[in-house]
Length: 121
Image (cartoon, rainbow, N blue to C red; front, side):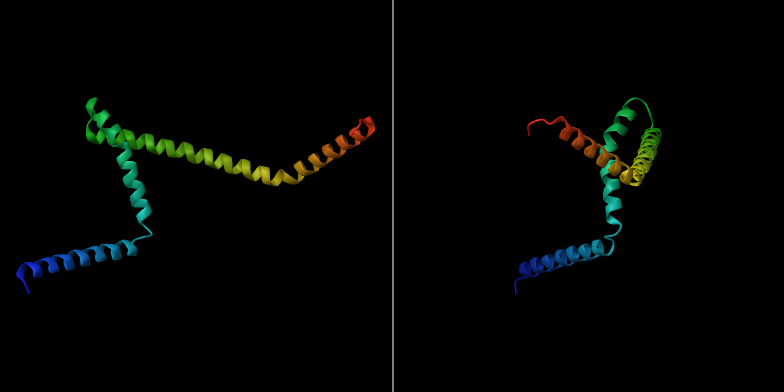
């Protein structure tokens, strides 16, 4: 065989085995991948904010601290809103029988009033 052909085949086999190794590695850590992907997306999205804070005279460490603090406060607010929404949902579910009874009584009352009014139907 030709030496250049051997080098090309060896290169393809090397890249193929590297690609296969990366795929196997990703498969083995597939449970943790969403966390890293989400972290990467958040870091990418917040990089312009960090750059603007640095242009205003903050150090990189200070800018990261400010952004992280705002991020944590936003998370706390969202979690508290989620907890309140969950409590409201539980209250709604527990009151469904009462709402059903009230609605049934209202429909029956209106049905009786409609029959008594003797309107042409």
